[in-house]
Image (cartoon, rainbow, N blue to C red; front, side, top):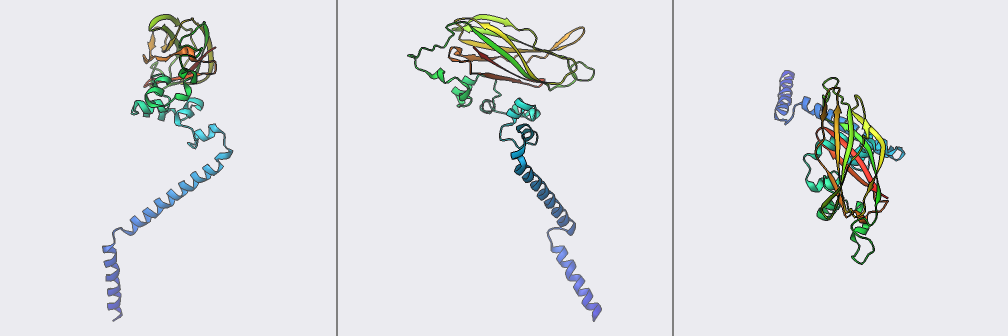
Length: 268
């Protein structure tokens, strides 16, 4: 009789196991995954609660900053790979929003309503204002390179890190007519370097009557016998520069499959 009870109980247990949607091993595995997720969530919560004591650089590093990935990239060099790789799939509106568009801030403002705060408020002044869209006198441009990063590999075929040399060509226009062409001197000339950040500034005179400035970066890999040109061919322009003041700093970026480049300029 006891044997019969044992067999009946065993049959009942096997019946329940057969009817269960998951095996005991799957249940244990799910419990472990849940515990892991809980631990990761608690770790992130602890990080967030202590973030008030972190520097903005550390927040960027741990992905806790309130600023965008593009901002963290521009200021500290973190998350640049994500920004660069994702930009290829962004719409022009998104590129404007993150400040990565090849078009000017004014263009992004006019077409999508982004970057308007970077466009001088005086550019919306009425025609009765004393300000005009072109320069009524010659001004000095201060152009500053702030960041460079090699993205593609094997620039010089040896250790993969290139010998980057960065300069710019500045074009000015007056009512659509070409005026000045300024070929700058070299801003950085490095050896076996993949990433650089800092500030290198140079000044140039922009003539009276100018209403548009276009800047084209030039990036080459300097070799002993020959120089490999990696310039993207992109140029970045700003119109109605007569409305700009010395506090209107224009930051521009050239992100592409070979390198990331950030620079800024203003007139005074």
